[in-house]
Image (tube, rainbow, N blue to C red; front, side, top):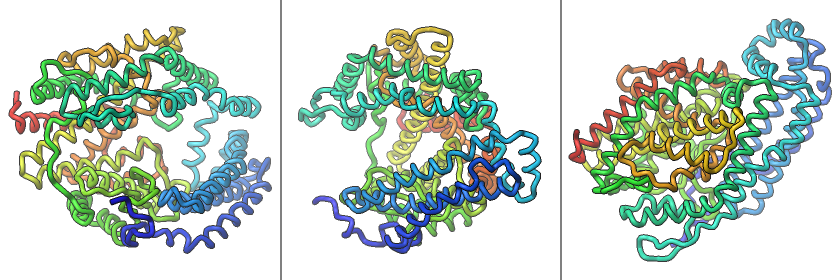
Length: 597
């Protein structure tokens, strides 16, 4: 039976967007009003430095325009995601993208004009009582002053942005559109074209030859273009280093992390502590070798489950009950928001024809924090539900405790809230289901997630720092040089029980995150912090401190915010605690699988 249409989905399983705009007419009226209001900014162009009152009025006008746009965007985006084949809402979404461009253009003057105000004059303005609530907002803005160029040079760099981004655009076109991996024979004997999606499926096959075939076929394709990918990655690294030097940073790493108010100590502490705990990953690889009965463990053996899938069908109604019980340690006030999400239709639950795939938590300051799901009755989907609920409650508590200008939070903090919920669910499942098969399955899922997020992303972070350092030192980033370093790095991470496949040395050629400019380390810090926070909530009753972080939004720097929950991310203690949890659960899985050391 095919997928149901949008019209066939029961209303109770859809999100209620009438709380954003009552209908399309109300949306269109707000759209037109916002477009007309863009002219309200004209009176402030060139005058923000005239007085404290003018600065405040310009700021409030700017923020109101952005706030109004966000609500418009949520309605257009969610309507489009409901059914991407609906031509009307596809058109509405396209018009909203055009409005975004107009809003960005109208507000572009604000930051450079504030930065151009004489420092003493601006300091005097910020003593005005009406501007005091915006002090941190301006502190963040002013932190960029030392790295902001004169207006004509900024305009020159902005104009060159497309040219400077050509290398990653080339990589994306190759990786997403032009790569032909060839055909493979699937586990059921069918010949099929290998895609990234099928590759992931085959790598989890219980049959090693199936995994090996997918691995070698995929990497043969990347290796055939190794010099092209070395060129695109090298060009992107040169761009990062050029922009960092131009903006007076010590390095591209410093430029990337400081622009998010994160000191480089966070990055360096992560790579240092992970390296010290690599023996735990080596043990996990050794466990794989024994449980899977392999003479040799290869890179393509690192993703297959060590346990059989558990027959634990979970309906959406049952999942709601599990979520409420798993998240109970966070307190009744936290659960009250979760119950609101369930009762007030913040969640679009089931698949329908044309619906956007995957899952996310969205919304804006003046809307509910909506969740999109494509529900299947599996335990994995319960994890997805609590993950997205973590984002949603984070957004709700931030928006209900902060003014608009502090009513959001950075990516660095976002994944901590969602992953903490996953950690609480894992603890609940392990305490609730005494079936050894279920326990082993949950432990295996946890360890694989930690391996992929903390260890693997830190391996990426190490490589990313190395390629930027090499280029800064004048060393050419050839395919051979990068393969030699990456191959040795991979062997160091996974240990002596991993047989070194020559193909894995070219894994760098297929990782899009290396074009994102020091982004991946945040996955690892987020997972580790979430593991630690969940333990603190469960064992020390620190739910209130945790919720203080959820309520803080952008009212302070990210490190100051997460410190409210009891984690100092410039020190390694939170990582040590996370690795202790990993080791404890590795011990449990070894015992359950009869492989205790």
